[in-house]
Image (cartoon, rainbow, N blue to C red; front, top):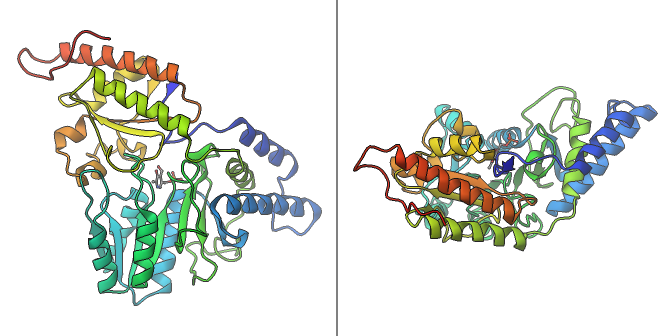
Length: 388
Ligand SMILES: Cc1ncc(COP(=O)(O)O)c(C=O)c1O
């Protein structure tokens, strides 16, 4: 199997699995218990908190463990809106993940104003529109750091400085950024930041919310008062241990080798299929992501044939794919419904080799030839039939 769907989830690193199984064997007690077994579990949680804080330039007490990116973002929005009840404007981009756009739509139905900042053809937001929106009224902005479908990286230093200037509160969805590019909250001041372990070789169902220590905070989950009262519920100790381990894995960020392999793959796709279009290619992008339209083809058909050949890729966001809705991200970038339907996301991993990519390229050639042969005569895509 060749796995090119790392933005959906990554393979758990063996070192993470090892840390989690040690935790299950030795630190399985409730970290709120005061006895020795409880203290051992508490130590495990504290170690992971320090490891994660160090990865993103935070203080350990600024980390709140959650069940993942979705909970972190829902919590961040809930906390900001509850803490600043007079700030009734939410400012997001048109390319947020549904974990942000979903709760914002809910808050909109409850009476808050939601301003959706448009993006250009490369997926970059209109910064003047952003400044205007956050300056007009006291605002809570929630801006995705790096997009899950296209890999486009938003200009976070500029966004943070404009938000700061306007006195707006800034949340960021860094779920795809952490572990792929440097993310440092001591250099780029954001109020809250969401991340998720399974996107950087940690376990699923475990994430965190960074909360700046000077920020007023209102929790979403109430109960036993764990996480210093910020997130009730017995801690997922093995998951947290795995998250801490994933955060401390040696990584080169950004990974120049990975960028080179992705760029080579794109160059080859364009050489073999000159009508293919790479979305967001003029913008800064994550080193591992490429989202490519094959005009005249149906992405779903391409993906089925690739899957039969043992290649895993995806039509865009894994979360959206079950819903079969046209990608709101690509639509916001100005692509037609046809172009959106023809778009395939390949998200490489640290372990993806050039040999694997060469196999995918050949399989893609065969797939497109096969699909073209099924098109009605005279219609359908124009492609080169000689497979290089
Ligand atoms: C950009 C982005 N934000 C949020 C999420 C949600 O994270 P989780 O799956 O941990 O709930 C995802 C997951 O696909 C994502 O890619």
